[in-house]
Image 1: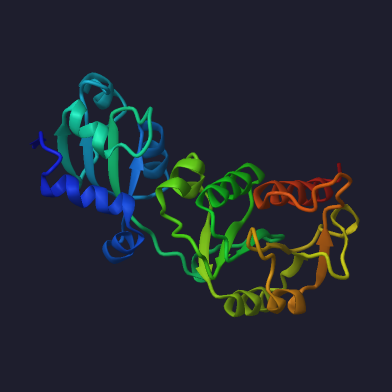
Image 2 (image 1 turned 180 degrees about the vertical axis):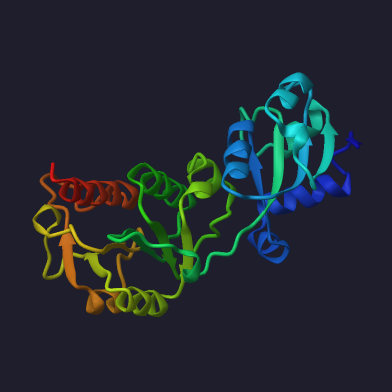
Length: 265
């Protein structure tokens, strides 16, 4: 089917998914832009519901060569450049926008290795930071990310974009702080909380066993609930005038120190 107007109900529904978290929550759908992102989503088991394709940008021959014509069960819409410029959330989208079905993200979906390393995020609120944290988790090969009491929708377009596909590859669970603390305790996974209070420098902490590294909200840090439950409080020593780092930078520093210790480097 060809869509030539931005007033088409299908286009309006797509824009609502891009703009409104409530719409994504209600429908169980979200938006993916670009051939690379679509390929990564499909590779990791996400299911396409609708495909919007601009042949002027992404020629049909290339579409078929990438295997997109073989995607089954998805409604296919051909759009012109004018319509595509309206539905593309960012520049350089490559001529394809897909509506995908969300997955479940309960704690039960996480499969832990024998010596798990997890990243726990409490009340993360900036989509770009969550996307960057997912990239760190993917690069480090973590067992997963657990988001406690989130203040941003994990399927926000900025999360999808800034994760560069890591949203699809990293095991991800969402739960309350209390649920996560109990879940970790039941599985013998220690939690190391980033905090200034009664803390040791991160590189002096023993991170070789089953471990969850816990990071707080950008502005407020971790709640007292996490601090009280911590097996260890750790910090990154600051040697300049700044008193803190971006949460995604902090997580990368601590996560890769944990990997260094585990690999005996």
